[in-house]
Every structure is written in C-alpha cells, then in structure tokens.
Amino acid sequence: MFNLSGKVAIVTGAGQGIGKEIALQLAASGAKVALIDITDRIFDVLKEIKGRGGDGLAIKCDVSSWDDVHRVVGQVLERLGRIDILVNNAGIYPFRPFVEMSEQDWDKVLDINLKGVFNFTRAVLPKMIEQRSGKIINIASIAGSVVGFTNLVHYSASKAGIIGFTRSLALEVAQYNINVNAISPGPIETPGTKVLNKELYDQIRRAIPLGRWGRPEDVANLVLFLASDKSNFITGQNIIIDGGYTLP
Ligand SMILES: NC(=O)c1ccc[n+]([C@@H]2O[C@H](COP(=O)([O-])OP(=O)(O)OC[C@H]3O[C@@H](n4cnc5c(N)ncnc54)[C@H](O)[C@@H]3O)[C@@H](O)[C@H]2O)c1
Image (cartoon, rainbow, N blue to C red; front, side):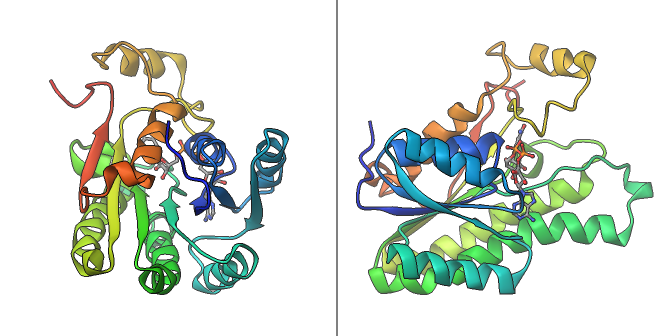
C-alpha cells in the first residue's frame, strides 16, 4: 500500500512486539531498515526480513546511552548512506507503586523512554536537515496523553514528555520539511504485555469498545502511513490508536 523503496529507516526496540512488527512492515514496503535493540533478538528479525526479500542491518545499542546512539547512527550512515525515517519505539513499563519507587526506578524509565528519544532524534537530525526531508515517529502511550494508570507514574511522565517533545520539535524542524509525530497506543498484545494475568487481560479486553486487544500490526499500519508521503501535511500530532478504550 505504501511504497518506501529507496528509503532508510531506523527502528528502536525492534527485537520484539510493536517495534519488530514496525520493522517487518517497513521492510515489506521497500525500506532498508536498521534494527536497534539492547537484545540479540534483532539478529533473528533481520534474518526474517532477509528471508522475505527485504534488506537492512541490525545493531545492538542501549538507547539511553548517547555514546552508543552516536556510534550507531554513524554506522547506519556509513552503511546505508541516508536516514529518512526514525521510529523511536524502545520503551519499558515496569509496574511499581509510586511510594515504593526509587530514584533509580525513575531514572531508568525516563532514561530509556524519554532520553532515548532525545538521543536518537538528536543524532539523526543533522542528516535529515541536510537532506531537507525526514519523518520522525515517536511511540508514546495513552498513559501519557489521555488517561492515568496506577503503578506507572514514571512511565506516564515519560510518555507525556514525548508528546511535548514532539510538538515543540515539529515547530523547529518544519522549515526543513521534516515531520515529527507521536502515536499513543492503547493496550496492545506484545511479549511485554503478555506478563499480565488472565483476569486483568480479560478486564482490559472488556473495556475496549472494539472488543479486542490491539495487535502490533495495528500500530505498524499507522507508522507506515506516517512514514509515507501520504502524511506530508501532518506534523506535531499525537494520534491515539486504542480501539476506543479512552472514549467512555
Ligand atoms: N504494548 C502496549 O500495550 C503498549 C501501549 C502503549 C505504548 N506502548 C509502547 O510501545 C513501545 C513498544 O512496546 P512493546 O509492548 O512492544 O514492548 P516490548 O517489551 O514487547 O518490546 C520492547 C523492546 O524494546 C527493547 N528495549 C528495551 N530497553 C531498551 C534499550 N535501553 N535500548 C534498546 N532497546 C531496548 C526491548 O529489548 C524489546 O525488544 C514502548 O515504547 C511502549 O511503551 C506499548
């Protein structure tokens, strides 16, 4: 549906779940995809992409480390020559009551979820500015943009931060023909959310008007649209994709 041939994309947190599906679909649409993750799983994802006739590379990296990210973006540019699409997807959501939250708990979530977005965006922007084009897509959450969730105060703060980041950066880089948008998914079935017990899983399903949990491909479809030139007049937005969960 979307033709991304000739484009180079970076996807963080591409080892599993939403990020993996985004990477697979970008590759299926013709983009060369740089798969970034802190785990080795990206090497299997790259095999899958190549097995389906796609192309890309996989580099291990901790998104919260500026040195790591700077090195990785240099490698992507050296090997693939350009960067057209950045999907900041890597994120963690460790449940913890706020009164038990340590400074380390807080810093870890903010460092990965929010500073990780700063690191990758800051590292790729000079090339996008030089190219006079680019698409930056940040995966936020309804927990940052619409609703509260108990035991996820640090997470909600990090995701709300991403939305403010998205709006302000969109203003700064619009002059270079660069679009910056956020996506706020509701509950999506991934290895990360599989840890929930069946009772909670069913309770959440019943609260979703469309009657099911979201799937990684639901989010990936929206990413493809925002990465394509069909969305060229959209910037600074936060798009909610939650099966109606936040409507009532
Ligand atoms: N699943 C949901 O219900 C849901 C809802 C709203 C938003 N989100 C957001 O979507 C994104 C993906 O969620 P998911 O459910 O697929 O998660 P997941 O836990 O299944 O996968 C996340 C991936 O990110 C990687 N990662 C973690 N820390 C990293 C780091 N420091 N550096 C590089 N990679 C790292 C992990 O290794 C993993 O492969 C996250 O930002 C999450 O907050 C998810």
